Length: 512
Image (cartoon, rainbow, N blue to C red; front, side, top):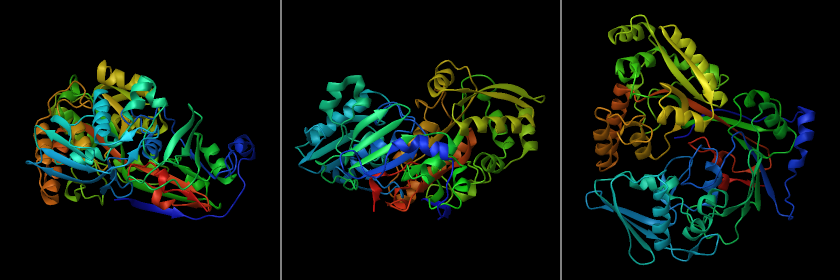
């Protein structure tokens, strides 16, 4: 459920003339081919466009326009609807999923998109080991329009899983041809194709004339040209100077900076949050009382307000935000800010005089700033930790492989796919479980959710899983991340483009 916190409509004003001049090369609303171009901006820089490749989130908006989904997940509500699959049904005690597929579809390389291609695409994706189908037994083709996925155990969350990155179907022929370069040469069946990419600078999508509706709307513009700009002043200058029509994931300072202009801004809370990842495999954090102490020592509301420029003061103690069907209000008080309780738990764990921990922070302002404030708050209960800023590759290797850090300041996206997030948080074999130390009740909680039949039973199982997360503290949630989106008056679909995961649904956008 998308939660609006604030929205502003403003009048034009001139800002940062030098930056505007530097950005003028971004062009106007007409592409070089005479077609209409939507000029966009985002702060993060993608490195590849394969939904089955390593993800850092910055590629999400682009791949969601390049690939037709097997099952469509509505970006704003999380509801499932037909994509390549027109219908689906779980049977055999939730162990068999049968999907009926559209016929006559093709990929952007003109190869056929039928059941055999979907099977091969899924198998290629799973082979890369960045995506998983728990308890998978087989993927079978029954004619050109029917796919059957069989599991060894119940899997009520499989449709949601196929509505995520795993279900973005890629051309098997193109993947075989490109090999490990496929992330730079993506071929899907969506309304847009990748036509240009300058790492750290720009991404360009072009309308694909061969698109046949498969969950996504047809392209509304001929081209989407995206500038990758992280500097807050440059972001504002591009918007107010007329070089950009639409922007997402803007700096938290943008709403205030855009006051008095014609640029519309909106900030909202979704299912993205910041957190402290925990290595439970060694050291003091192997004791859950220490993890619980850290959680009680953090003033989440103050942290959120300080590090979101006042856009939000909503702290997080569970994966989903208030208002979401899988947010449980009665669990909100589990980790109230309580330094005295934190000190008591530390003493019980054998650390009455405090302790020193090792920390890393992903090299992004939000995660670095969280590390600074968290360090200050933990120091008040006797816990000393300094967070070293590291790029994502170095940080994750140091944390998950080399076990050089006890804590990592990072973030996660719960999304509509509850199976992936709770599997990541609670299962022994999860890639997010540093050291793969079993979590008491974790595997059982995920299995219970996977065996749930009906919405009520699923909600009860998810609540139970959330209680296990809070009791065992496999991560420490901090706050739900506000996301800032802005657009000029010539843009259509601005509000509809805002996604639960903080990304933009580029297929919703057009120009007047």
